[in-house]
Structure formats: C-alpha cells, structure tokens
Length: 168
Image (tube, rainbow, N blue to C red; front, side, top):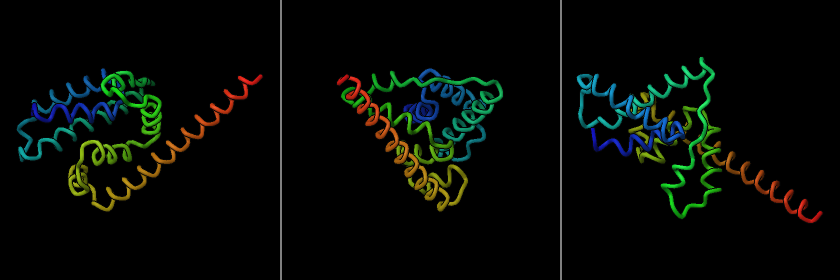
C-alpha cells in the first residue's frame, strides 16, 4: 500500500486541486482501505482498488458540498512550488481548463495522462466498455483543448487592452 501513496496523492491532488483537501482525501482513502482490506481480492490490483476508493470518497464529498453549498478554492501555489522552472501562467491556464471538464472527463484524462494507465486498465477500473473510455478521453482532450484556446484568446484580448490603456 505504501508504494501506491505517491501516485494516489497525485491523483487526489489532480481531482480536488487543493493540497490540503488532497491530503485529507488520501487519509480518508487509506483509512477506508485498511478497514476494508479483506475485500481486496487480488493484491496485484491494489492501485486500482485504492483509486476506486479515493474516487468514491471524492464523489461523496462533492455531493456533500453541493448540499452544503461549500466551495473549495484552488491551491495552485503548492503545485507551482513543486514545479520549478515551469511557466506559471501556463500552469494556471491548464488548471483553469481542467476545472471546466466534467468529473467523468477529468477522471479518464487523469487516469490515462497522469497515472499512465492504458485504455483496458481504465475500462476495468471504472467498470465500463473500452469504447466508452476512448470516446470520453477523446471528448475530454477536445474540451481541454477548447478551454486552453479560450484562455489564450482571453489573455490576448487582455494584452491588447493593456497596450491601448498604456498609450492613453
């Protein structure tokens, strides 16, 4: 289980986009996994089993937040601090674009792109046909591309506005 923690934390951080909330989610996941260890049938599938627990806890938390009206803000600073030499504006734009994706699209994109799972592994883990994984991934990539393009257009228009105001 300990070997799965770095990847599991990465996945939690990508889902909740807040380091503190990701750590809380990870702790809840490990606690539940330890309580339900007898339900793990194949130790070789522990990564998928843990991600499923983490994902279910995340969805439960989203439902609770909707009922309570709680909004969790972005915690991009930790991600930037852990990524020296990155273009901070690009990271922020990417984070905003990821936030526009539905949970289903973000989940498939993260499992393939961040965790490096193949389509078959994602399909097995999520309990869906491989074709559904492929179509969701294609739609997720397209929506992410569109959101990134929109961010670029907004940045360009803001840049043009700044040039005009400087001339006045």
